[in-house]
Amino acid sequence: MTSEDFDVVIIGAGPAGTVAGSLLAEAGWRVLALEKSHFPRFSIGESLLPQSMVYLEQAGLTDSLHAHAKQLGFQYKDGAAFSKNGNYTDFNFSQKFTPGPGTTYQVKRAAFDNLLADEAQKKGLTIRFGHQVNQIELIDEKQYLHVTSDTEEYQVSARFLLDASGFGRVLPRLLKLDRPSSQPTRNAIFTHIKDNITDPHFDRNKILISVHPQHEDIWYWLIPFSDGTCSLGVVGLHEQIEGNSPPLARLQAFVAESDNLQPLLENAQWQQDAKMIGGYSVSVSSLHGKGYALLGNAGEFLDPVFSSGVTIALHSASLIAPLVHRILQGETVDLEQEYAIPLKQGIDCFRTFVNAWYTGEFQTVIFSSAPQSNNVRDMISSILAGYAWDTKNPYVAQSERRFRVLHTLCKEPL
Image (cartoon, rainbow, N blue to C red; front, side, top):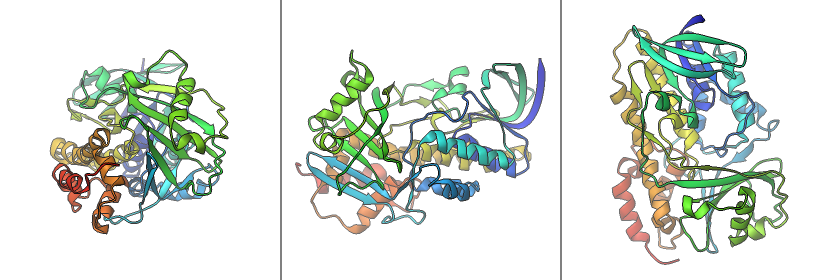
């Protein structure tokens, strides 16, 4: 069996893997990314948050993103809209508390991930598609990986290993790091459709989040793309979403129950079958260990409701890359203090708002007609835009306490 040596091996070539790989390769390290899939490939997580643009800029990937946005069908995005029982509200992400980009894109991930991978390779990252990691062993301060593809079987060693495998969760599975998530088991059914939306008031520059008229813990996403298609999905508890009919029929039935989506999509063309994922909320006992760290969804995934998955993945990549650089230079780095704790601060902020969404408390806040200062609304807008690590924002620094006070002030029946 052949064997190769690298400074860093990354499992997965999605956004977290390519950003971390770009930063480390440009720092002069020998970096290999092993990607099980062949690109382009489908993935959910299609509505980016503006905070993501900061991390893409750090990795030198935004110029190509902007240059190819129209060609690849990326939809300009400036905010998020919410609908419930005839009530509508929206947030413009340029009107926010935290400095930084206020716009981004809604992307078909096959094209987006492929673009990032192409650009990362230009920066020196080696990517091997269709290569799967089957076994990992720590020997003499190095991680040894057993790798297979359709045509070969070999071994690679790494001075440091990053797991950016997303829902593949390679290291949690191989090293038995999984632990139960604090989130209930929910399912999502989703597809792409030709939406044929003619409503002149519909804003394609925003993701639309709609609440089921009878069950406030069931919600829908509608993510418009620039080619007249959209990503459409419904999310609910396992027992609410499961059924004997095919996923597409179930999704269509849920849309028919929606007071705003049913008329909005009355001319839609359902061109593809629907897919379903369940039990997607995950956590781990630790985000790091001797010679390795977990990035993005490989470590923890909360819920798709606020589109935080890609942002958390990119933040983790941006956070870990300089720390790995220091480790490779021989420095002592406390990954718990410098990586895990800072990363979890933002995740915990998102968690506060995710939990409050499903209890209905955050829905009460955003649809409330009670007076709110522009400053408070801007602070909430910042979090929805992905700036969940800005501790100057009181709703980040003290998310639980501040939110409870805000909810009390806004509490009123819809």
